[in-house]
Amino acid sequence: MSSHRNVPVMSDHEHTPQHVGRDRVFTGPVYHEPWTGENRRAHGNIEYTERCTECGAERLVVSNQDDYEYSPWSLPPLHP
Ligand SMILES: [Zn+2]
Image (tube, protein in one colour):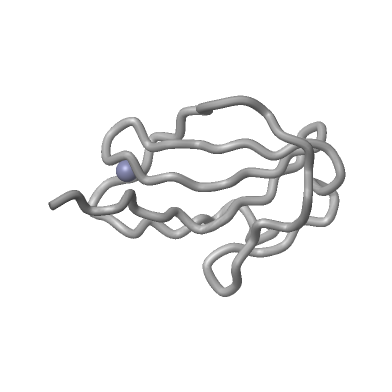
């Protein structure tokens, strides 16, 4: 099993990703080792954002057919 689907969870829950915003044209890889890995087969088509419905963390996804590459989850900015 390839490792690119094993996205780390940087919180006490398993993130629940929801597709938000519009699909964008693929502009480059979004993986960031060692947290996520490259999946070249996912490159070349579209990129979009996913947001966790529980905590608001976001990640980038590049997708091509049934292949995906993910950025690490990043938490939303803290508000004073
Ligand atoms: Zn979350």
